[in-house]
Length: 131
Ligand code: FE2
Image (cartoon, rainbow, N blue to C red; front, side):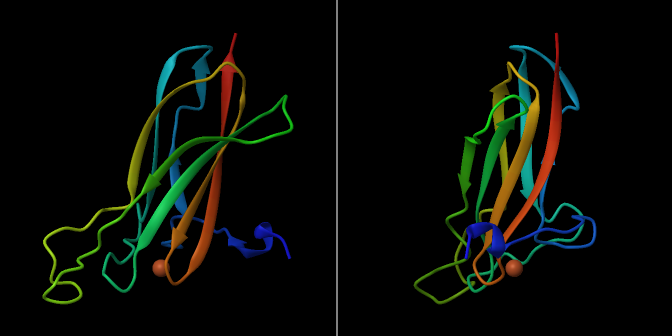
């Protein structure tokens, strides 16, 4: 078995677990860009003590390279836990992250999201670096 066998993908507009990558289609080399990742853009994912998104990782695979780079990692560490019980706590982290990046090569971002009970989900977004 490989990790790829465990990762699910789907259309994010129809499946609430799929991470959504918001990034420009085309950028200039070395230009500072903002890339956002989130889960639940179209259909909200639950955010409760029992059921939540734990993390989203953002990778980048250059077109001219063999390996993926881990560009950012967002952990969502609080989901209503409390001494008073589950879902009685004062704070919930929403599954959203923003990274500021610079690219020197065209490639593809791949986001991996982990739900504590529904496992691993992914999506990708290509970005072209214009000369
Ligand atoms: Fe879930």
